Image 1 (cartoon, rainbow, N blue to C red):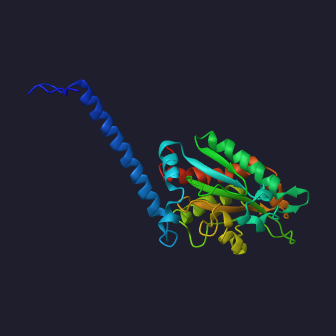
Image 2: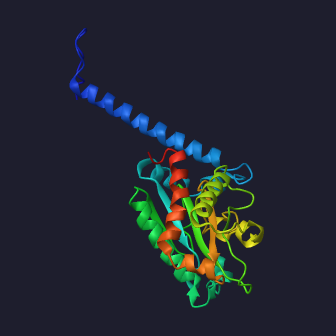
Image 3: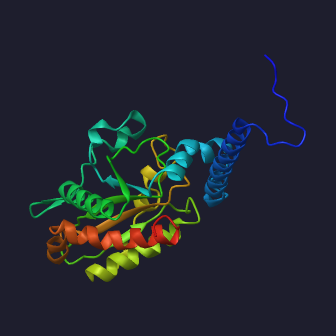
Length: 263
């Protein structure tokens, strides 16, 4: 095969310019992906990134998803499908959720999740509805786990939330502040933070060190207890899933805009 020689002072063949342009585009794409990857690693707390395997598990798939697609969040429906938990989560198979005065936590969680998905997708946000077993190394812009409380004292009421303790990334405390402010402001429920439990602070679906089926550490994640099924005022709100979802979505949208994931 004879190689074409360029004229001494002439223009190179057109295919050379085409290859050069394609090379620039490929280099730009690879640089963008690398920057996103580095950004994700920086967001993982030093404590959480104890090993390279933990920090990168599922990372490239997530990097490509976030780099090439719309903003994406995961909404876990608390207690949905617990009977299908894998063996590593087998001790949770009997945890089917609360129930009070004819109101089921699972029904509330499902209704709010569907309303939240509908509202956010209208704003250009892709929403994955997740069951009680999250995908291994789940990667998204953020993850919310929906729950509702129930206790013997009907006077106890309010909302609370928790990220993993210690935070798995630098973004989780900010996500908590935004979601809490939006929800408490929109619903007028009291802040029930003093009743936050260890089970919330070490929620299994965020515990990537102990379980394969957990959110990636670079995915900011928050578990929310939307109110008390056992309190009449809270229960009245929980029977209005669109209102509950709208209260949550305000915080979600603010978080995504702060991250330049939405205009």
